[in-house]
Length: 298
Image 1 (cartoon, rainbow, N blue to C red):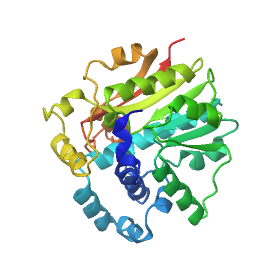
Image 2: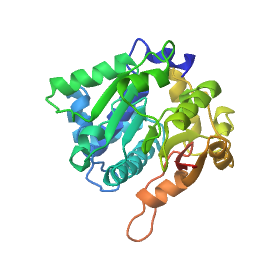
Image 3: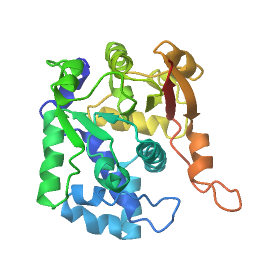
Image 4: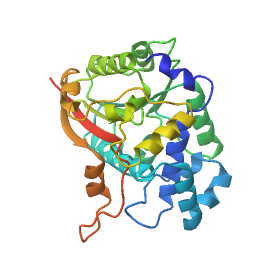
């Protein structure tokens, strides 16, 4: 994908760890708007962390201390949305799913009961992927045989070659997931990644990914939680480097042989996932991110 991946060559991705922490914490929420169904995430975090996220006051202190405003809510909403796409794809019996930069994603395990024929490929750097597999083994989590781990050094190895070697096939009906990834890539890496998707995607294939607005990279501070989230990524030495202008998602996709099905900004996510029975919005979602869901143009 490009040299931006040097940050994950020698150590576990901080982004992957933080996402797993949020999913773990949300699993113990009592409020159904906040509660996730990722029962695997708590298995992947250190045991000493569990008492902190199980107890509501401690959980709130942890979230407020370590995450920018609305980012907890954003990851919860994103997880639920991508879960729904993942489950739909399994029900529709797509041939294969490819998760770019899979991190500590657990969908291959969580949704195994729904999977009749779909092969799930998890593409990631060796250090993070090995940490995940080792934790699965250590905690006795059974890995579905249809889940295929593809370890890659993004700076030295070809994504296309690694996929072909692992059995990922071209021209198959596929779902491609890029969750919490595009903002960390440069423009060249984005082009290469979507080129791979275009090369492999068969008829009626789909793509789901999240992205940030280009204005965020310019520091225009237009959205809820923007300044705090930028400070956070800088402190973790995993800076963002790619965004899409607010009105240009459709043209971005069209240039890559994709057609938009749905684009969800923070307000859309609030309405879909954090609206109570009276129609009130009960939580604010960090405004820097959007989620795009698209299909291949035949």
